[in-house]
Amino acid sequence: MRAFPPSPTSPKPAIFTRRTFAAGFIASTASIALYSNEIARHRIEVTTPTFYIANLPPAFEGFRIVQFSDIHLEQYMEEWFLNEVIARVNALNPDLLVITGDFVSRGPLAVEMSYSAASRCAELLRGLTCPQRFGVLGNHDAMVGSRIIRDHMENNGLPILVNQFVNIERGGQRIILSGLDDYGGGEPNLPLAVPEKPDAPVILMVHEPDFAMHLATHRRGPLVNLVLSGHTHGGQIRIPGLPPLALPPFGKLFPEGHYHLGDTQLYVNRGIGTVGVPFRFNCPPEITVATLRAASR
Image (cartoon, rainbow, N blue to C red; front, side, top):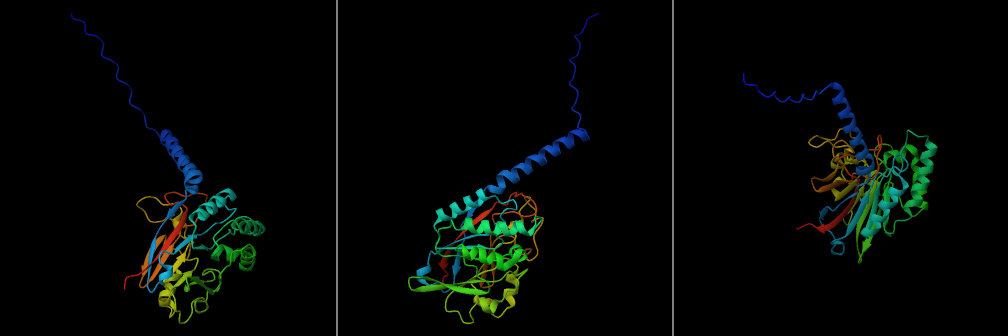
């Protein structure tokens, strides 16, 4: 009888168990968390929107406004990273610099830690070289103490506009920069911040972007050409294909970027810090370089 060689032994199929799934899931989650904390949270994106403004004075054609927001110093925001942001901003050499609130965080640390963070944040911001620089307060600033935050900033060379406006002049012409008190925790007063009959374009800073809906129904709303806000962090953690998983109060309608609301434009900066968790995913920290151009007539 003819002998046949033995059949080769087939390899055993891999067994996909709950244990291997759990191990893979934990490893993947840990990798994403490490990336979101150590890399994505510190990978700054410089965005360059252009805003076409009606009746923009010729002297302001090409005028560059740099904006950043939501520092949240000492709640996950390290001093070295804020110094890196300051260096990047200085290198951009803006015509005007605006910071749209939340210099510090309120909670979970004791409020005394927030006071200390406010003092240190103001000292670090002295490193900004743009001579024309202004800020507004955010909801965390209001919770820590608006007067305290404002005093620290102004004593270190950063004027804070609270229901006020200033003229930004260039070549004998001007635009108007307005700033509101925090919408969530302060007492914003639009008639104080926006002149009744402005003779120049108005750029309004307010921390919470959803204020734009109130602006749309206010009699002085149509006088505002551009609103600059922060607050939302862009959602901070963005899963591709899905809307932001979590947005704060007064920041749910306009998560990030450029919006047109009738004749008023809105830009929402994603901020540079984080709150809640020290993670960013698919939502990098942002420095905005906005260029003003005259709208075609």
